[in-house]
Figure 1 (cartoon, one colour):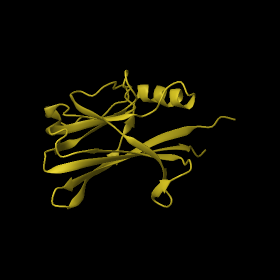
Figure 2: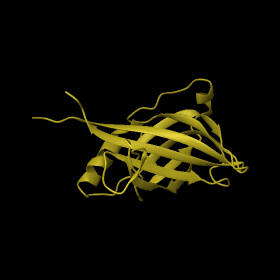
Figure 3: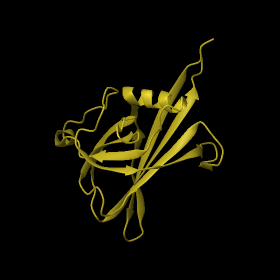
Length: 165
């Protein structure tokens, strides 16, 4: 008997302004890249480490007027700006909190501080460790004008579940 699995990622971008106000500026889904599947299999077999860093990029300015869809064959960002280490924890989706024990969901987070990644951001991806930085997933999104007026917190929740037959 064969068992099929799916990998789903949902992201949330939160702007934390210097005056103490915070707001969710975007939520959405990601696409797992073809090379990202190899990263998953390698991590399962203890052949390599999994997700290690969050990379942001300015993408293509033409996307502002003619949005493009992300594709699974993407291997790198179009115009990288900054890469930063992430924190990864198990996430209890039922109770909406971190879990000390393994679950079917991981929570991946990073905060780009006010002085970091100040550019017109249009793309991001989670990548594996040095030196290869295998692109696990990829997102093209509406432009975020990142400036030193706010910290940008990015959260990605990745769930692996058995497909229902």
